[in-house]
Image 1 (cartoon, rainbow, N blue to C red):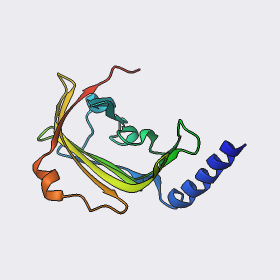
Image 2 (image 1 turned 45 degrees about the vertical axis):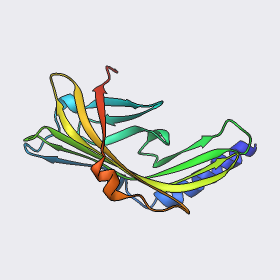
Image 3 (image 1 turned 60 degrees about the vertical axis):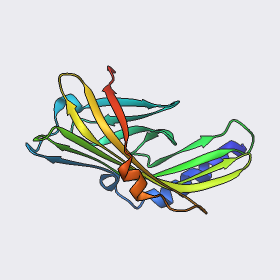
Length: 184
């Protein structure tokens, strides 16, 4: 019963925060060059980093419908966020997504993705963490090898901590290689 109350409370908070924003504001696409999202990009693209991963599901029209976020895990962007129950009693996490955008330039074969995590709160055995993050991916992707070679810039803000050092982040992008998964 307590779990149902927590989930219901989360749903009310999430609908209040997300409900007044249209889905088009959350899941955007911009297509340059020929003006059409390439068919070969539609599907799921995944990159592993340490013990975690990033993944994006691009729809035929270029919108991003689902992601796997290194912090939040699997997120359906139509729902605007996710709630995770912790393994230990009293632990949990809430993640509220902001606008997410894919931009493809057919002239340069470059795909750019912006993922905004507007707010998160994690209740841990040692205390709570609150913050937000903005992640940017850009790089060339080619139809023949189903590989997207990206540079990842990640800006994270944690309540009570110093803001991210943008100069250090921008001068040290993380290289990630996304592979297109064969999912039907």
